[in-house]
Image (cartoon, rainbow, N blue to C red):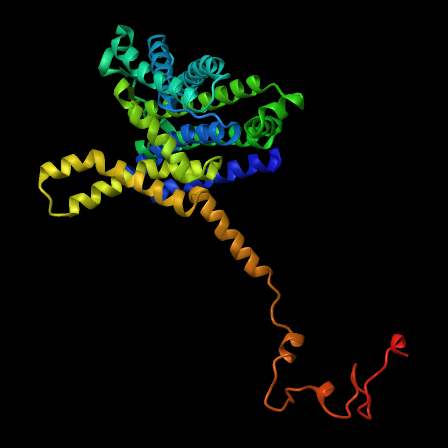
Amino acid sequence: MNARRTLLLALGGLVLAIGLTFLLDPYRNYQLALAAAYLCATAGLTVLVGLSGQLSLGHAALMAAGGYGYALTSQALTSAGVGGVPRFLAATVAAAVAAGVLGLLLGLAGARLHGPYLAGLTLTLVVAVPAVAASVGALQGDRGVRIEFEGVPGPLKALIALEQWQAWVALAVAAVAVTGLALVRDGRTGLRMRAVRDDEVAAALAGIAPARVKVLAFVVSSVTAGLGGAVLTFVTQSVSPGAYTVSLSLLLLVAVVVGGLGSLLGAALGAVLLVLLPWLVGTLTDMLPLPSQVTQRLDGTLPLLVFGSLLIVLVAGAPGGLAGALTAARDRRRARRRLPAPGPTAARLVPTAGDDPTGPAARPGSVGPTATRSGEPVRTPTEG
C-alpha cells in the first residue's frame, strides 16, 4: 500500500469515526476515547513484537512516561498563561519526547538481549517506574499530577458535549499514531524489521544493522505508547502511578495477541476489548443474583479470567487472532466467488430424461473416436 493511499484511508477512517460519535451517548464516547488511547499503545506494541520480534512487558511504563510528560508540561504552560490548543499540542509533543527518550534508553540496553532476558528487562522497568513516581515529591506521590481542565472549545460548546470532544481529540491522536506506524510498516524500515526478526545474521550480511533496527523499533513503539499516555491523561485530567501497573502491561500484550500479532487491525480490536470486556463482565455480574461481596471480588478478577480464556481459545483455534480469523473468512468468501458458475456446457453434461446415458459414441454403428459406422475399431497410424 503506497503512502498516499494510506493517508487517504486514515483520513476517511477518522471522518467516519468522528461521525460515529454523534450516534453515541456521552458514556460510549468516553469509552471510545479510552479505546483510542489504548490503541496508540497496542499499535506500537504489535509493530514492536510482530515486526521486529522483540518482546516488551513494559509498555505501561512508557505510557506512564508520556502521561507524566503531558501533565507536567501542561501545568508549566498553564502557569505561564498558555492554554487551549497550543498547550495541548506542546504537552502532547513533550509526552512523545519523554516516552521516546525512555524507549531509546530501553532499546540501547536491550539491543543485545533476546526472549526472556529482554522481557525481564522491560518487566523491571514497569515495576520501577510507578515506584519511582510514587516516591518523587515533584510527581506528587500516589495522588499523581492533576492538570488544568480541558473543556470544549468555545465555538463547539453549543454543538457537542465534553465526552464527544474528548473522543474527537483521542481519535485524531490515534489516527496520527496508527498512520505513522502503517507508513513505517509498509516502508523500507518495516522491511528491515522483518529481515532482522527472521534472521539477524542474514540481515547483517545484506547490509542491515540489526542493533540499529531494534533500537529504532523500540523508539517508534515508545513514542506511540507515550501518545497513548498523553491521551489518557487528557481524558481523565490526571496521571497517577496506580494507573500504569504490571497488570496493564500484561493486558496490553494479551490484547495484541488476541487481536492478531503484527496487525494494526488486530491492535484496534484488542484496544476495544480492553475497554468493553470489563464493562460487559460487570454488567453480566450485576444481572446475576449474587451477594455484593462476591460481586466486588469478581469485578477485578473475572475480566482477567475471561481475557485469559479468550486468549487460550484463540491460540488453539485461530493462531492469527481475531484479525487473522477475519482475514481467513474474507479469503474463503473470495475463493467461493472465483469458482465458475454453472454454464450451458456444464448444464449439458447433466443427463435429462430424453438423453441416452451411454452417449452416441457408445451406440453400435455410431461415429466416434473409437468406432466406425460399421462398428470396426479405428486403427491409428502406428498400428498400421
